[in-house]
Image 1 (cartoon, one colour):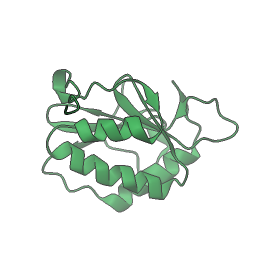
Image 2 (image 1 turned 30 degrees about the vertical axis):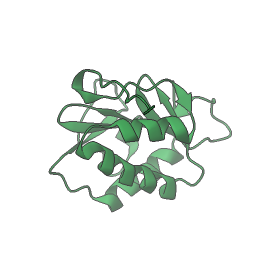
Image 3 (image 1 turned 90 degrees about the horizontal axis):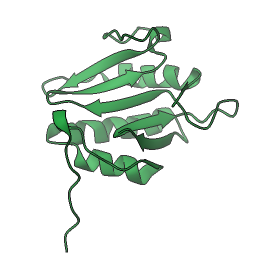
Image 4 (image 1 turned 45 degrees about the horizontal axis):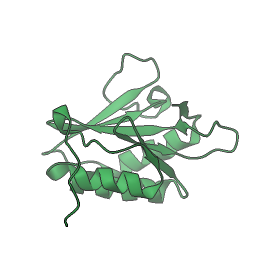
Length: 142
């Protein structure tokens, strides 16, 4: 019997059960619709290279990434993603402190977003720079 594919919520975001570690995030990536899966698989590997030992989880149907600093609470995260119909939304929770600041403002003071659309070419060096900077900052408790 074939495994059942995850449900896609409105906007195309995969419905993945809450879980910690590689497996739930991989399940999310595998369930991302269309072009989004390949793009995020590549960027997920980039995050792993930029932040050795990065911790991962899926909460609220979104992958979260943590540097796991010893002085932080267990559930502190520096980045999350979410699928929408036309783009992947990357949230840097302390994005206002990054250089350069990611381009999309948030209603929350510190969070900044980076949107990835199908036709976009992601500057992987810039993205890795944001990830490294963000991972060195205090995480957001969630």
